[in-house]
Picture: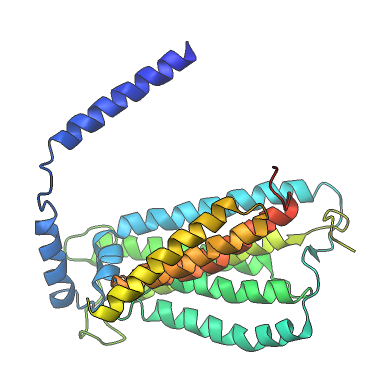
Length: 243
Length: 84
């Protein structure tokens, strides 16, 4: 009975999808109008040099907010599941599951770590000028923290600080969007209300710079939190390789 | 595309296929994870050649470093060798 229901509903979905796709002429240039609009409006009116960023934050800002929310939910769910399992015994003393790295790895990690963080910060600060943006910069910063986490057993991250960074960055995104409702020209959510500036300047593009800095901090904090949760147990004796 | 770019694209496509076969066929799962990481590395080069530097940066940071370490943590906490 269950199988019949599943197959029937799948058949209905496939029928409607196919009938929708048949209506689209094969090989036709259906995205022509939108492409021209984006390519002209981004540098001319909004003064954003990187058109991809302009599409992601200006024209599809609400989608970006959704992506940030998805990442936030994933990190929260993972943290809650793992924290519940590991806090059953009352051990409060955090232990890294990895073994101690060699001196070469430790020294190399210590040298590379600040440069990785600076590269990530550069990428999300210049999101509207050069390729990359908040997500990429945040992921690169998390990579730097990952290097330190797997090299040093005593390198611990304060989860309170991560929580505050996430909260402030996420609220900045939403509050900027709400300001758009009040101050922008068309009174839309996430519309640009700051002066656009000059093309190729660091302070150009209006709210894109601020939003991408917020997204960079948020993504970096979330992925670092996920990795720290995965690599650290709250008690000894859980990991088979623990000495 | 210039000649060098076409040659690089063909070489990376061949590398992608080889690394994909390794990732599927290797019985040692750590080796399979490293092969997956190689796929991401070559794919990132491919994205850069096809003029998508934004996607290349994402693939480099997430595909090479973060998803690899998550797979390695998973393999360490479960079994290292696939069943015959």
